[in-house]
Image (cartoon, rainbow, N blue to C red; front, side):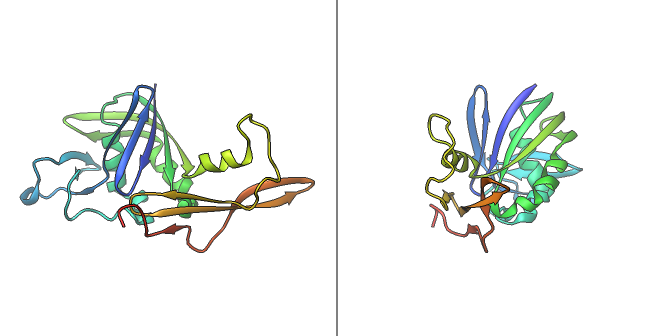
Length: 197
């Protein structure tokens, strides 16, 4: 079984495995014969062909609906093109879109057939995580692994991406006699600013 971590970002998709990492542009669009570019690669999903790596006429990936589209599946399958087996997949979603987390996991989990230079068949078990989780854990625990319930709360965690800036604001609430640190809902946790701006 292969274990793969995938970050489908707005500029780049990053793949992490036991043997290391790799990346490719997240740019994707439906295949157009008259405009096919030499440097683009192709994946066929649900009977439709998609170009990966193109630079014009691309699908908007900064929209929550992208994560529920066949274009998203094309990007994920392209990232998994080297496998023809069972894959345990960990994938992140921006904090603002965690309400579709279960829907994305359900869509990715199962047996999938797609075409990339021939027929491919994968059995995927998908786990969808909130991006920024690592910073959240680091805040709750110190480097020795001890719990720090009252340290610097509330806290703001920021993920400066290529096209966007994601934030998570934490708050402490009481559940019975125990303090619990959790993300606080904000108006717009994803802002259209990033290093490309």
